[in-house]
Amino acid sequence: MLRSRLALILIIMVSLVLGGCWNYREIEQMSIVAGMAVDVDPTGDEYELTIEVLSIVGGQEIKPKSKVMTITGETIFDAVRNAIALTSRKLYWSHAKIIIFCENAARKGLVKVVDWYVRDAETRPDVNLIVAKGTAKDILHTAQQTDEILSFQLSEMIDSEKELSTSRSVEAWEFINDIASEGIHPMLPVIELVNSEGNPTARMEGSAVLKGDRLVGYLTGEETKYALFVKDKIEGGLLVETLEDKDENTRVALEIFKNKTSLTPRFIGNTIVMDISVKTTVGIDEIMGTMDVISEEGSRKLAAQAESDMKKNIEDVIKKVQKEFGSDIFGFGNTIYKNNPREWKRFRDDWDLHFPNVQVNVTCDIIIEGSALLKQPLYKAE
Image (cartoon, rainbow, N blue to C red; front, side):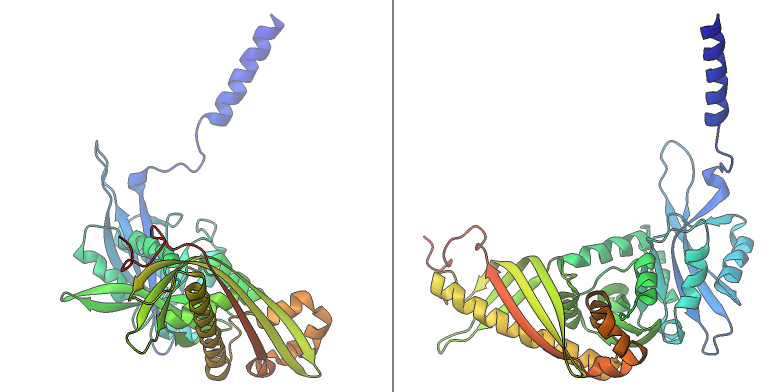
């Protein structure tokens, strides 16, 4: 009898707990946000938000489509609330994949724009942040040319960029972490509209360099790749080498398998030297020419040239960032802060003055492993 009563009490308690969600809402009662573009007028007095929302119709087959709408407000949250007048529904942000900032907003400072998003309880910190060259809303308006969800497509596009290393996804939490950390500034991926067969098409390539939270310049896709080598953020991509010969040149594509970069600071009086050691494992993926690059001697020459070219490219991108932007996107200061906190105290307060004068000592070690399915040049294979 006692067991029966206990079982009945347990059933009642479980029923009360699992009976439903206190904030449950039908999907038809929400406007699910896929992505957002932020534009600001030159005075900075008004924000213009362009939001891509999912339009979902219930039934046996549910196929979401997207709708793009633009609203304005004195702040980001003010504009978000004003959107209710257009949708008659509250916006649901947990599935948002991207936020695109116009160039003007990025130059004025992104922290005040991102503040609401990272502060709100219904948003998620894994949304991708992107800087548009020009106006941000024009990117999302291209969604009207297709039935696909453009924000989801752009999220997949930027994630696949790791195969090229000409751009890199940065989520909101990572951006805020860089802003709050000692001795490092953020860099964000760049998007722009290009003409493709007569239609405007979004292209993701290159990086926006920020000093603090303000845009100060851009890196090309190729420059971004070598900046990522310094930051130890390389996840793939190619190194293309051209070997010169008196008869003909041979071009070789090396696929990046893995990479490890280490930064070691040294101090000579008030001079900072950053030793940068890059160790990269690659494979020969393509040979356009007849020069021998597979034999032990040929592979050694190929690796030596690849090391020399990588060293120069890394030094060039560091010099550009130091002299043109003065923004420590490489985290040199953060490396000193973590490894030499006492030394960091000497330079911390005026790091912006010291960073452009940091001397770099770059060493590259490229290890060639394999040549895909062929063990010898194609022109010799029979």
